[in-house]
Length: 394
Image (cartoon, rainbow, N blue to C red):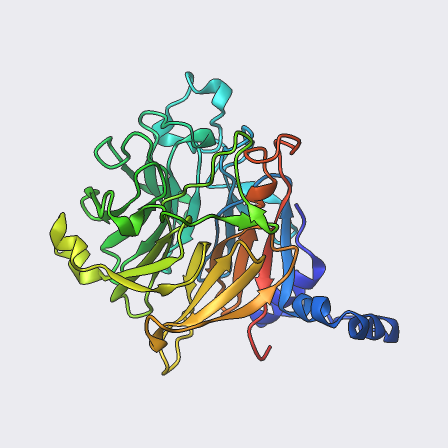
């Protein structure tokens, strides 16, 4: 669980600090780079920021550069659910040990409403808070009653400031709340439900009221005929079942006008105007506002670059089949093509993005295809990584 010295040097440099001069590259290293151009070119873009002893999914970087990660309870009873990555590489349970005290073996002793049960995502809102999405479904095998919630932590005090608990009308049986984005005015949260019946969830953050939209709509369901492949072969459970994950990836346009999402088991990107969600439209009225926005392949994470230029937003995608991060210029319309930002065998199931205050992108690798879900010989505690993508021109 150590941050590499190279990463610390980059972070300090981005903050206007210095950790000392980097060592000069030797002639031998230069020759090795020339001998392995493809791999080395990838390495100059992709830098390991941290490594973990457990399976990570979410990452977020606050406006002041603090890094937070989370570890869901999928194949192990993880000892920490949400943590801050400290400068020395250690993990600090966040916001404290009490919230991280839940264990599956102690589920009858603890209140799931004020403990992390099975956290899937952490997102800094740029307004001084980190939000935590807890679907409360360990091993993705049924909800812990009273556990599904969206929690806001005040970064100034490191204390929980708001808990929005989801009832069975929102976190329905078979639900697995996945990721979240926030409206530019801070009034609404938009979540994906990747569970047995996909949907989007719209939350009024002032009142705490939440509602499911596009519940069972084709845009939020696994696409028929799509087979997720990793390592060149279909990804299947040991009993032969295919992977069927519903609405998973989510992103908000830089102006806050459009919400984008897609099913993990799917290739089609969809979008809707956030104004339609804010108006409280329901049923067919919401469905009529959904726009298909081109094909992008199976993905897990989406991110829209905050450094938007005059040509429109750049959408980054985790290409789980290619061990790659790809990008697409949304201003080109539904027919816009994908370009590969970085492809590297170490990007085993690139999962979730965040962006640092200096514009650098971060991405976790959750190694889902290597987990005990799909490999009976896999360790329950799966080592994973956090990576930094160097900005073009750095």
